[in-house]
Length: 153
Image 1 (cartoon, rainbow, N blue to C red):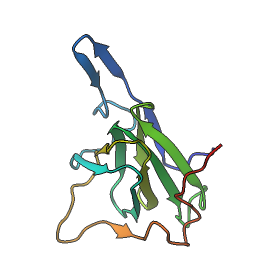
Image 2 (image 1 turned 120 degrees about the horizontal axis):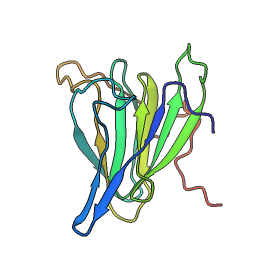
Image 3 (image 1 turned 120 degrees about the vertical axis):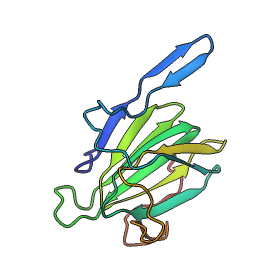
Image 4 (image 1 turned 30 degrees about the vertical axis):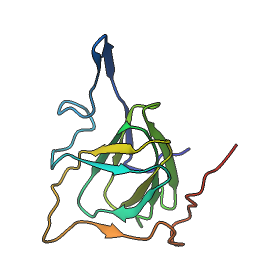
């Protein structure tokens, strides 16, 4: 899979001990860190799709901390070398990664675990209630070449 221009992946460091575990997600000394806007959690129940949207200014940093999700990105940017590319990332309890999603890249996710998935986002901008930097399409919008249905082997 060719990674969409501007997307970055970070393998997360999990430090287990007899009490549990600690997982570092994003540090201010990471080479992919840009700036801090806010941190928030979003969840999805099994089989639920939360898609599509993009931001004009905001860069997202997604980590699935509980459960598993299929994060899907679609590059619709006119001047991108990867225009038209689709990326899938399976992330969560069985694959501890952070995915940085650039501005203007459509994204969404589907909970693929049998329990609720909890996703941490650390975007570069805080949410502006008066003028949200969020542009949405329906999950089944035909302008994005992606089918959210399960794909068995």
